[in-house]
Image 1 (spheres, rainbow, N blue to C red):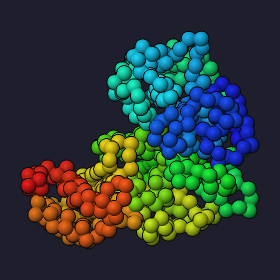
Image 2 (cartoon, rainbow, N blue to C red; image 1 turned 180 degrees about the horizontal axis):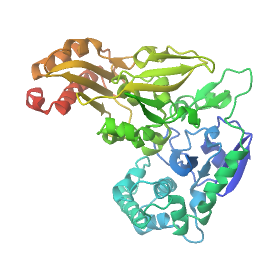
Image 3 (tube, rainbow, N blue to C red; image 1 turned 120 degrees about the vertical axis):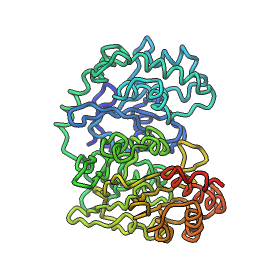
Image 4 (cartoon, rainbow, N blue to C red; image 1 turned 30 degrees about the vertical axis):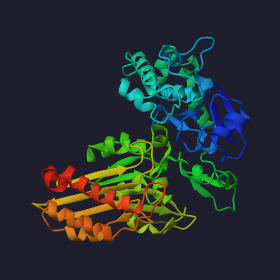
Length: 471
C-alpha cells in the first residue's frame, strides 16, 4: 500500500501506483484546486509540493503532478493549494497576488501560489530574482507577468528575516503557511519507520522502470498506468554526486537540479547555472533524472549531449550483475539502446576537467527557455601548449541519435585554434550529420544552427577568435 501525507492528512491507498498524482488528487481526493492543464508539464497549473527527509533535513520541491506517478509520492509530504490555505484569511502569498493585481481568470493562480510556497520552503536566498526563478514553470495566459513578478518580490521580502532557521519552521511560525508545517518533519520520520522499503512490482513480472516520469508520462500515460512498475526515483542508492579520485560519480536518480546544487559540478563547470537555465523549468528540473534523460534516447536530450562531450561511462544492472559501457555506445539507432529490458542504469561517471580543459554547452530552441532544443551541442577541449590535445563535440537534433562528431574532432586534434581551421571543421561537421525537417525547424536551418553553435563554442573558449569567426 502507498502511504504519504497529503496536506495535513495521513493517506493510504491501493490504487495503481502508475496513476498520475494529479488524477488521485482531483478525482479520488476531490481537491480540485490543482488544475488539469496541458498534461505535459508545460503550464504549471497542476503544480504541487513534495517534501521529504534528506540526510535529516526536510526538503520541499515543486513538481508538476500531471507527470508524477502516484508511486513517487510514497513516504513524502504532498502539498496542494488546499494545504496552504489559512482560511478565513489569505496567506501572505495569496495576499501578494491580490495586492499586485496578479490574477485575472484565476486558472493558473493556484500553480503560481504553490511555486511561491515552494520558494518559501526552500533554502535559496530570499531575493526577488530567486522568487521569479521559482515560478519559471508557470504560464499565465491573460494577466501579464509584471504584476506576478511584483507579487513574487513581495513574497521574497517576507522571508528577509529567516537567516539559518529551517524554512518550514520559519514559515509556520511567521504564519506564512499553516501551523501544521512545523510538525511535518517528525511525522515523516514516523511514516518512514512504518514503511516496508521500496515499492515492488508483482512477483514474476518484468517491470518497467520509472524515474521522474517527465518523459514517460508525456509519451505513454495510459500504458504506464497499466504496467507493473519499479520506482527508482526515491532510491537513496541511486542518488548522490561525489568526487572519487579524479572522477565525478553521479547516481542515476539525480535530477537536473541536483546537478546544479552539487559543489563538485559547480566547481567543475563555473557556467553550470547558465547551462541548466536552458533546460526546461524548475518543476521539471526537480523531477527529471539523469538516467531518464539518457535512457529515453531522445536525439536532443540536453543532459545526454552535455555528458557525451565529457566521455561519460554508464553502469547498468539487472539486479544480479552489472556492466559498464561508454555513453557514446548506448545508442544503436532511433530509440534503440544497447540495454536489455531487465537492466536499469545505476550511476555514471566522467573524468574531471583539469586546468587545461575547456567546456561549453549551447542550445537553441523556439523559446529561449522551457522548450525542446532545435539543436544542442557541447564541447570538451584540452590544450597541450598552444595545440588542441583532445576534443569532443556532441550534437543533438541533427541525426537519429545523440551524436559525437568524431571526424570533426580528429581534424582538429593537434592543430592550433584559428578562424580558418574552425570554418573547415564546421564544413566537416556537416558531413557527419543527417538532420530532418520537423516542427523544430528545417534540415537546412539545423545545419546552419550547428555551424553557428560550433563557432560559439570556440568564441567562448577562445575569445581572440571572435573577429575571425564573425566575418
